[in-house]
Every structure is written in structure tokens, then in C-alpha cells.
Image (tube, rainbow, N blue to C red; front, side):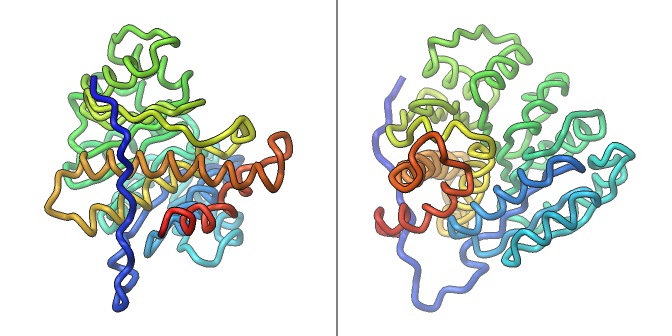
Length: 297
């Protein structure tokens, strides 16, 4: 196992740059009772430098999502009677996905057969770059032999509970005390980048692993993972746009490392302002500009 310590930061923007140079991100998520999660991901993607951000949400989540932020686009999709994406919405989501450099799927998604169909259709497309988080993972594990089906470039961002379920879905042994080994094995077995969240988050690309040293206990709050999802998508979109000739999974690895580092750095800035007990996930987003500036971006 190789422990990676180098962090690849974004290059300075050129004076004649334009929004399409900095990537287009799509956030697929939300449901009737969970409209806030994709909003957090979308706002984090914007604050992490994505040139364009679009949210696709089920119809019941459209109004709260669209009224929460004027700087991203929101597309409503067909919903089933429970307020989640319907079977008919799959083609609508795919149409938006084809225009995106990176797709983030999972925040507030819910769980169900239609959502498993949606995930399976997304991961089949070799040209797609996908960050899968939260209920994206909770649906993925119900897709038989999902690593064999996956053709897209994928970042998985599980917390320890989701990591345990991912391991079980591919008959992999799991030990909560062996975070590096768990992340590396899942990455090797599934052909994905794995971000195992928690204190000292681990980012694994096969045998290459990075252990993060930023962040604090105040970040253990609802929505913090949704922020990381949006950041990961935005940074990957910028890296793949600027380095299109490089391997996409290597770009994904670099982006995931930078995302967890800046996520924790923003959390540390927010802690100085709010303390740990009172910190909420939007405080992390508000601290992102300072985290980026401090690191020369």
C-alpha cells in the first residue's frame, strides 16, 4: 500500500476564461421530504468553482430546490406517488447527464426499485463521471453484481455504515478498525475511487491511499456529506476539463483528495466562527471561499 501525501491544487484561472472551461456539474437527488440535500450539494459545487451547476429533482422537490439558490439551474422530473423519481424519470435524468462533465447522484434520493433502475442506467455509460453518495450507495448495493455492470468512472463516498454495506454487497470482508485496508480493497474490487468518510477520511485508488488531516467533530452534522459530494463533483469537473488527456480515474483521485482536504479546511474555519456544537453544514459552505483563498485558489 502506498500512502500519498501530495495534494494537487487547481491551477490559477486564465484571464480569458469562461464558464464552460470550469466544468458542468449535475446533481441528481431529492424527494418530497428531502429537498435540502441536493441544494447543499449544488451550493457546494458552485462555491467549489464549477462553471455551471444543474439540479434534477422530482417534481415535489422542485419549488424548494429552485427557490433556495438563484445561481444553479433546476430541472423537475417525473415523480411517483411517494415523491421520489419515477420509472419514467430515468430518461429525463439521462438527458441531463449527457450534458454534464460530472454527475453527483444520491443526496436525498430515497430508496426503491425505480431508483435502483436509475443508478444502474447511469453506471452503465462509459462516458459518465459519477460521484455516488448517500442513497445513491444505498440503492447501488441492491443491484446484483454492480461492479461488473459499471462502465462509468466512479467515486464512492461512503460513511462507515455505508462502507460495511458496500463490502457485503460484493462479499468482501469488512473490519471497522482497518479503514485503509477496507477502502483500498473496495477500490480494487470495484474499480472505483473510494472516499471512506470519518475522522481522518481515507481516499483510495487501488493501493494508493491518502489520509486526510483536516476537519473536526463539529462536521458530524446532517448535510456535511452532501457538501462533500458537491465539492467532489465540481473539483473533478474542473480537473478533467483542464487535463482531458489524462486518465479519468487519476483525475478523480486527485479531485477526491482535494475535496476532502478543503472540506475539512472549511470545517476548521467554520469551527473558529461557530464552535463545534453549533456548526451546521451551511457554515462549511460559507467557509469555502476562505479555504480556497488560503490555499492559493
